[in-house]
Length: 172
Image (tube, rainbow, N blue to C red; front, side, top):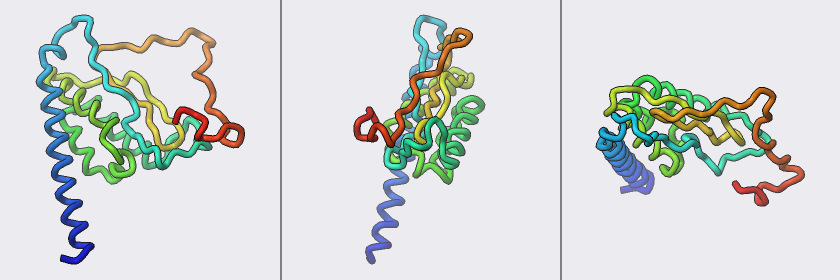
């Protein structure tokens, strides 16, 4: 087997394993149906940063998202707020590899998709936005609400100017 053929075979096997693992995460989320179906003090939420590519961070992008980050985040939002049981389709999205280079920020989305699907209702967007081009701040919930900012309130602190504060000196 030539090297390129071996890489292709490994890539396919890894992709199948990732899809299987993702399906397991969604099923695990769905197993919490008693939590999702109650109106107790528990409010299931999934962490933000569905798009989370630290290798492509560009501090000059500020609070904007690159085109590929926006496309992927918008598709994730469409599925989570419309058909959360279909979220596994994101694995075949053209921007998946760039948006989800590692699964650590994507897995919480799968759990909440399972909860929402099992509860028979879509998730709601709790927080949204972008940072540094390659990060989305989007977070989802079933029941939690985000309080409105008081009139005249400022946004969070400004992102440091990369010409003044080196990226290595921030918490990225």
